[in-house]
Length: 184
Image (cartoon, rainbow, N blue to C red; front, side, top):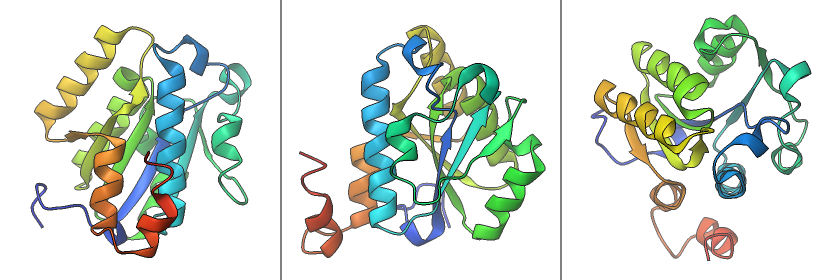
């Protein structure tokens, strides 16, 4: 399948990188980043797309933001103290078990943990779509540099609404009816 082919939700997983309570307030435009992350996790659950969460150094950066934890029944996450999630065997194991081809990724910081994890995903042969509007860094320039590096490496830089509609494919579906208020 071409990396430019439309997203097929049954071949995707959503990966939420380090959207943690103590780190989030330091992120530029953090309220918007959190809002888009909540929309993506909600849409993923509605459309049965698996969601994986990571937390970086939880004692220092806190738990995944409550707004996201509350969306995930039996919330679980992969703990890491390394920027690249693929360097954590538990993450790779959980991802491999899903048998997906494409990762839709979001999180913070865009130029550190998200970028390094997305680069590793590309190395592992996954198609990678990074949601720019659901990702952030403390400084906007660092976010833009991280996204540009990912684009140059072959990731597709995308957005939440674009991805949700691409997963839905049609307006006469139960998914559209369930999610249309979320997208207004």
